[in-house]
Length: 189
Image 1 (cartoon, helix red, strand yellow):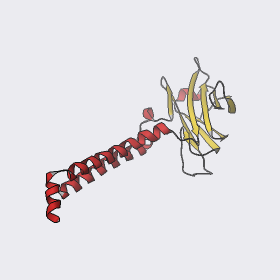
Image 2 (cartoon, helix red, strand yellow):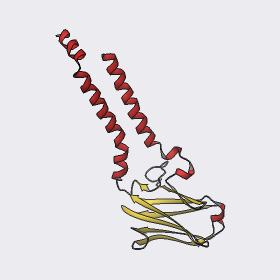
Image 3 (tube, one colour):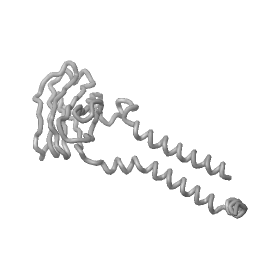
Image 4 (cartoon, helix red, strand yellow):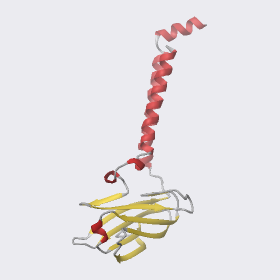
């Protein structure tokens, strides 16, 4: 019986670990269409990457920036059609209509498909708007959270481990309440 309980506990732990690791690795192993850093209008796609080498040399972020400070924004114009039209980039604190413009790149062609800039971002919410001046204009929007905790994401990531612990606790409780365990325990005393 103890062997079964140990096996059930190990199985529950492995299940919880697999669910949790799947959430952690979600961004690194997704297709371009499912990447949260990609915005798509029709067949046209752009990808946003943010870097803060002064804090983490290998860190790559999308919409959740861990610390305030100089942030390198790199926008990849994935589709060739976007490379043949002028593109503007605007970063605003808050939202694009009511917020203060922090950085604005004027309309320009980017034949290599890469737009990069640096912005000093303070703690708070920011809006990044990439506008391709086509007919009709294509407008891609990102909401950045700088040095803020995303409680919804934290809650979603913690559901699997909490469920695993609750299931394991229930299994242990059921085992300790079983007649076999009581008989085994009585025979040991």
